[in-house]
Length: 304
Image (cartoon, rainbow, N blue to C red; front, side, top):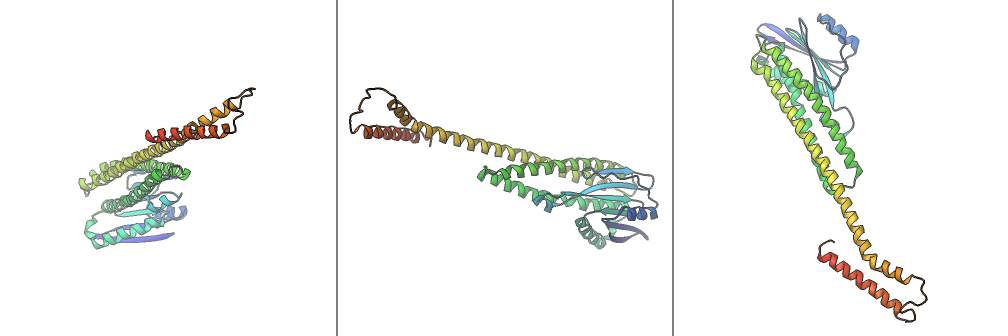
């Protein structure tokens, strides 16, 4: 377990922030016990945000979106838990990237400590910084969608494209469901903070506005993936039509030869031209001329 601790001085009092990376259950329970915080058994949900209000503290769960995981099959999000009391805030997560992001947030707040007036203000800036990490995720997701669109238009016969489309579609659906729960939590948090004497309504609803914009972005990318899937299916259908058209033209070109061969293959006693030494050559020439004429007609009508 890695531990980060930061203290801010507010009007002669201290506001502390402690972050734990991958803590064990016993270590977490011990630290919460020192804070006189008793949490019920936490759910292991990795797709739902959470807001719980207790008499002396609140519990939050938001998510960190990992842009790099779009290249593989790892989890694209990590839950980040918050316990906020009057003058202290405890956060923990299993991701080392969260600790790196929080280090940047700590440096920013240390440069401007006057931004912190209570643990609620501290929680606002930390959650806001966590939500901002979703924008690089969507930027990377947009690049992946552009790559898939390019491959769909130029390599529509590759089955891996279909797998990639459905993989990205599943990811954006999970992210959309996760952001939907974060939107509900942000609204509940805004209502709670709007009733706090030290919190302005701007702080209360700005997080909600950020989550709304992220949720709208997820809806946009979901629609984009539906469009890419339609393009892929249309490309496959067009390619199948081209194959069928080509086979039909080839069949039509060889149809005269098949008819003539079938006629001369009949078992009649007297076949016209059977005794002529040039009959075979004339029949072959007739087949070539008819096929060439059909080919010229097809090209003139731009069927080829």
